[in-house]
Length: 253
Image 1: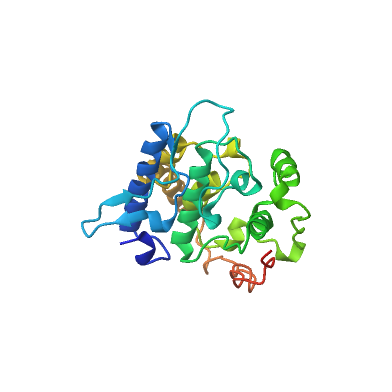
Image 2 (image 1 turned 90 degrees about the horizontal axis):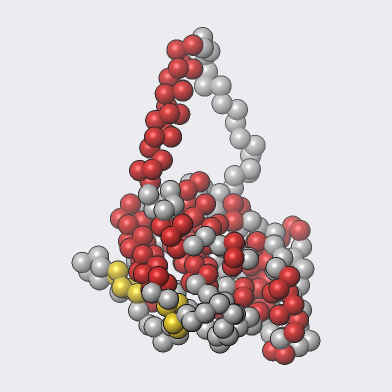
């Protein structure tokens, strides 16, 4: 059974555990100098016993040394990192980290994060959320014969939608995990080891800080006089409402 066939939306503790196991599978491959290059929901299998299996290593490649060239035509478009989309042939494990971030976002919402209709459209959707490509990727895009005569439209300011706006109800730990995977510059993305140590995959590490906050609140309750009412100002209407999903993005070319 593909992971996409399981219930999507807000992750339960069981789903979070399964995601953690899946992520550790990808990490194990990367630690052995192997990049999968096609991480997506269809390639993450779940048995009836709850065993996670990462499958389809048809695009997998053993990493050799920094600076070596690899083919850029890998990964399914919706989970493809910017460096792959523009045609960069010098990349590494960060492409799998990006894909894991896309899968994670899809598990939270039940919808693909950036369902591009073409490579240019995919880049447009990413830029609309994360901002401009890094200079190296801009240069590679304009130098790539595949994109001759094409350009990436500049997103309208009213159409810009950040990850925080796409996921207004995300917990801070989940948002930090997602943003750590989805950074434009592959050198800035968190490593697998850093993500495995994240607060999202290790929620118990937040407990001491939570206990300190609760202790401070109890002290404030004892020191401050009682004031009738809850003292909470109502949030401005529509402030936290998620934007409706748009699918009228850049046409297929």
